[in-house]
Length: 512
Ligand code: C2O
Ligand code: CU
Ligand code: CU
Image (spheres, rainbow, N blue to C red):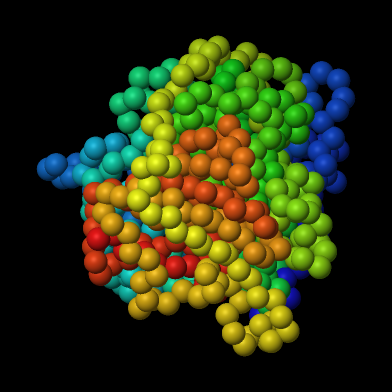
């Protein structure tokens, strides 16, 4: 397979071709879509991005008796990310990524997943509370040509979730190729709130990823040994599979449902003009109250719902800045320096262009929901999980396990932990390695008790299923493992850097 090259030259060339056809943007060629947008000047700023953000179609299923049925086909395809260049991709009911599944709390659903990609895969419903047999994890593989149904009742607070391939040792590759999509759950409580809710207009799903294109326009999944150690980090930002994406804001308030769907990059997100925004939701639900900030860190697997006021003449860009970082060293430095990946580049994801006459929006409700805190005293058990990376020369040569939890690499036939049904537990999540790892637990939404002994910051005081563990840090989370039990079929917990998961930084628990 060919050496992967930075896409920036490719993109510049492609961009220039686009500009030739699109004289309206004249002059902005050099910087388009890449780094350091200079949004200065007078009056309305010139647009910088060139492609309308793709909005994944919504799929609300079809009623069959008391069940809402969704039909998904996992397929091979090609996608034109860059003008006139067809890139081989995989998607769900489409060429890259999949539809946004729209679920209602309380409804009985059945999701038929047909696999047409020529090799075994599976789709996992990330963040949802469901029986282990319906989880779509590595124990529910779907062979090529076969269809498997996941059937369960939605028991979830309104939030943004997602689905993605979870095929053992293949998750990173399959997600890289496009096998992921968003899930939006609605509930009665949030339906009654005056929040922006017009899908694709003022309520916008934004799947953030980064990819690398080879000179032939293909997105090979061809990780080096270093990429396998550190995680595959791209140099080209994707928003819903759109490079150089923009949206036109027609209303004053715009709600973005942001998913970090990357393989390995932690994004340090904010707007190019540093304008403030409100975070209203975390992984598994709305926050109790909007949290005003101008910066949010999202690790792979995490979601945040934010609402931004688009007022003003200026276009502005949702971007990830490499300087932020949450670990002991700057992410950019880790990416470029000897520590390698796990961080992120500077990425311009999405330009927002306010239209001349923004429609008024109602002000955000002061109270969004109630989150009953789980008391540490109610926990019947405490477990500790240490995330480890072995980086010795023997490991780099492929001897021994490089990525482990509590010294063990994932084994399909070994149950690591057994949790009593309906019990509340505290899980202590530690990290002995040099880079941050996002820890994800299936089936539950947990609450963060503390991070390094300190209370979680406001954006993390909601329901979570994935949490970033910085080097040397201990994060304590608490969860109730309610309702479903199965002595034979486990749920997973793992690092959501997909290369780490595939390399063994994953374990299994049953609820009995
Ligand atoms: Cu997002 Cu085990 O998965
Ligand atoms: Cu999951
Ligand atoms: Cu990891």
